[in-house]
Image 1 (tube, helix red, strand yellow):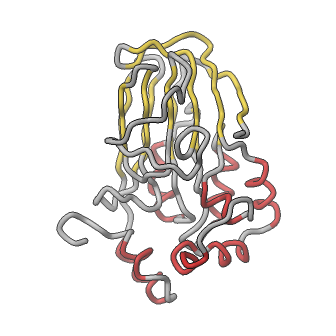
Image 2 (image 1 turned 90 degrees about the vertical axis):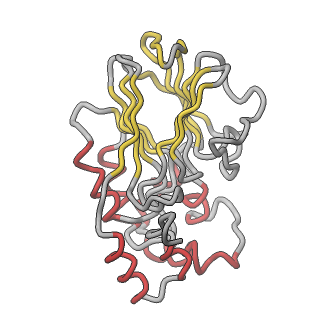
Image 3 (image 1 turned 120 degrees about the vertical axis):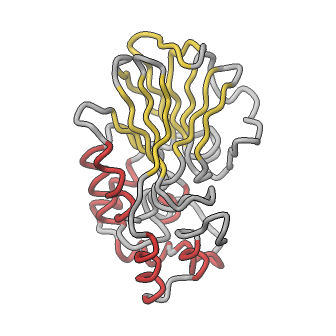
Length: 246
């Protein structure tokens, strides 16, 4: 059974939603100015893995996020989920384990796999009345399952009147479902939708408005620095892919 925790959230707030940073600090720094002091910040996991600054990313999320859940790469890096060792050159699980300090490892170990946030009063988003916000990294109850924009959700994955927030795919998404809404902010650290600009989302609970935002940083320079450090070519190329230059 997944480790699901619950809390209550003020229905008048604005949610700043981010996911899949993957230890890419320059990308994270590019989205930081979009966060306001009054935002409820939610991180949907995969803070670490792949890139070079796991401690710095964990430090920021710990200091600013109001609610954080654990992702599959976080679980790999704390030894709580097996992974295919042939992917180590790309995933850098063992390298990340060597970098992470004990304090951040213990913090990652303390994170829930899912959360239910109960709204103080119901809100309306895209004509759907929402009472609850369900946080999951992959599909609910399976952190490694990808829910792409065109993939059906598992049957009965959510209670009625739910806003389901997912990460994992690195693809931004807004979907209306029978039970409510599904939003994926996309990836901050490694977008995979053929747009290298870091992706995040803002959900204004009071107005029901959902917006995706893209920022910019020197991803070519970052990729060049990784190549100089002998990072796996695929993990480097994922930072710079566009539809014109795969």
